[in-house]
Amino acid sequence: MVSAEPLDRATVERIVREIVAHTVRSGGAAPVAAAPSLVVSISARHCHLSDEHVEILFGPGRTLTPMKDLYQDGFYAAEETVMVVGPRRRMLPNVRVLGPSRSYSQVELAFTDSISLGIDAPVRHSGDIEGTPGCVLVGPAGVVELSQGVIRAARHVHMSHRDAAGYGVKNKDLMDLRVESPGCSILFEDLLVRADDTSKLEVHLDTDEGNACHLDAALKIELLPKKGGSCGCQGGKH
Amino acid sequence: MVSAEPLDRATVERIVREIVAHTVRSGGAAPVAAAPSLVVSISARHCHLSDEHVEILFGPGRTLTPMKDLYQDGFYAAEETVMVVGPRRRMLPNVRVLGPSRSYSQVELAFTDSISLGIDAPVRHSGDIEGTPGCVLVGPAGVVELSQGVIRAARHVHMSHRDAAGYGVKNKDLMDLRVESPGCSILFEDLLVRADDTSKLEVHLDTDEGNACHLDAALKIELLPKKGGSCGCQGGKH
Image (cartoon, rainbow over all chains, first blue to last red):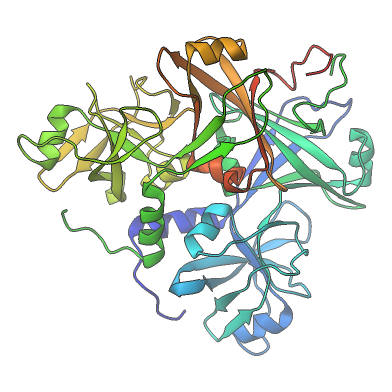
């Protein structure tokens, strides 16, 4: 790794702790019969890399090395990390790379991270990076300048088409997620359904969202049909 | 200020930026006729000090020096800051003191701050500090060890009794706050009403909550009667 400005111990420890995303499983009843167990995962800041960029950053012929499997089959946190550098030499020193590699590189930050970096990262869904800000990635073997690809990942829920049918939704619909925590309950709107044949049911929030509702202390978690507006309910029990 | 471990530039800049709390005003119509304009303020991490602790930290005979008035009359951000030190030498170097002084000292952090400090700060309302964790405060003239008083301030709304009557609520009731932002709208539950004769209408969120809903980008902000549960509505238009 190249040299960097010194970091205080708290920052280093926080970064280390945040690298491995953590997960909360809900035992609460979902609003449909025979609903599967709901998993809510906090995605800490991370990046996805193209094969070309893996070789530039980590060396010719190098590929990503799986370190820890993620909840979705086939995906993993890699051993590799990169430094993400923003304007005016602000940087995040150890941003985890997630595998497998993709056809494009993308950096996913929480809003707090983007403030820290000085990058105005828009809320976007993965892959929707046209016109987003860029940054510089620094690895042990080289440097990549991304012209775009820095986003705040929009909250979303992975599921199979079968699960989607159970919830009465389909791919690209929006749902709500209610997290009941002592003194800080939140209803997250705008949760995008990403349904395909094979995904396991899993909500992805970022660290700001997880902290705002103190997810680790949650008493009840519910995935709900989108209500919209102030409530959107049409009356009746629901 | 005493010496400390070095900080990276990004951390220093972030801290400076967060010191002065920022405020968003809603032009959206509130759900009652003739409702007052709604102000939502982000409380960055800060502390309140007793007169005794001001003198220990800043010198005999010293009192707080107002630097910037807060929205509520009579309250201000002081020129003074303290270092807040947690376990294992983790620390936050420049935590703003808010005035006027109080009968007890209290440190209010966002959850992200408390993770960074290594302190398990519970969600509490201001003043409700019995049994909460302590910390060490370091000022230019001395050190104070607090045996308790580190909290994550619970979200709340200040208002006059007159405003409360307009919303159909009273002191200590709970309300909901809906923030509509592109791609990251949130309904915050558990918003405590703090009504008295003189307060101006103002919601206080912490930085995690403000970041989770990207408050600065909000399109619409609504203060709503508590719905409770998944929705709690009894049908009908609302």
